[in-house]
Image (cartoon, rainbow over the protein chains, first blue to last red):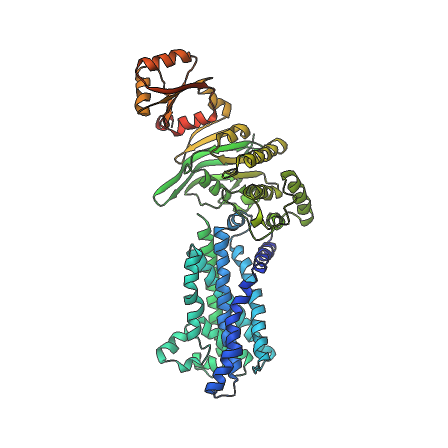
Length: 267
Length: 313
């Protein structure tokens, strides 16, 4: 069986299981949509926004992608534990397919779910009056960045699921993995507004790079977020560097998670 | 006969536990081979190593000529397994579980549909196929798992304690299904069980495992022959091990006698039961009950895994 057929089969299985638990798709949307529709406009009205030409509602809408993707990816990691404890993991391990493809099969579905969720989130923000400035290249920067963020976050979730034996412990770790970085990554305000040490910390987070890239793509902010990270004058170079950072983290975590899964699956 | 399963020096050590200690056996094509032993004997670990879900510490295992470590995909392509615990996607229908196996094992879609229909009919789950597996009873899940393992028409089928936890009626129905596989296919089956009647009924040969080792390996009839035609069972009041020692020191019991619980079992080996009972009474044993019967594989198993294990091994 070719690797492509195997991934298609494994993805179809994961999609069928995910479709039977629609809450897995809907619940992670609630908080980001709430931020985009209610909290961001309220903050804008109360505090006056960013005091730039950038629309604060749009700024936060993209910021909440940085909450949505980690939440969805982390919840998807729970399915790995369910497979292991009450599902068909041993059957899959006994199948004539490379074990790493099991991780890839799950990732494909997480990518699809996140794509739908991000479109819903941005659609909701647009409906609420968010002001995006999209160009073809901007959309590509956004899409590439979002895609790599999903790959990075799902790699982390798979790794976590391989290391944590039970659902209860995994759920306890979820806020630290999925939510905590979001507060430092410039989701609600530019990272330059943070104290110096925290700004330095934020620059090391892949999420910060991903959000700055997504805003560069869809906000027409001239790469303000990228400039806060790199301090350079060439915006395209900064975007490429940030994309490289997210890609590096995504590739590394995917490789590590495949290795961890293959090792932990063997008793 | 070519070996469908070949195991040489296979061992598995977990931290602090030697689960399997360098075992050797081979199983011919079309043979039904039983691995018997108590819980913790190493049976499931052995199946795990053969199916590639447990990494061996040492040794070599081949399935249909493929080394499970060096050619894992080819070895897994040639085999299917029904594991001891339920391994199903519970939210999916029975049909979806079967189709998934077919696709993973590379069975063409049109061919898979026909095989699933045939298997569902022969295994008696045709009416259930479109229900979620979570709604199946324990026996129905087992049937579904057996059907799933057969969809790919494996050269080697592993059945790890397939009837454990099932009620007697379902268990016997399932044994009929497995017996049907034995009678109507050329598939090699490796079955683990601690129900000795299953092994006696289904297996061409059995290996008895204890404490990670194979302590006996032969045809069931040959293993039974080692205990003679008739056994005397003495149920005793008091220290049964001391009683067995007394019987031995008085020449009334040989190395093949064994004690389990409050019962001493003596192969009569052609001697008269009446003489043996009289002699036991003469040496002062307090006999609560006495019976004679033909030996079963249970007796072979108990002799090898009971108090006589060290001598037997």
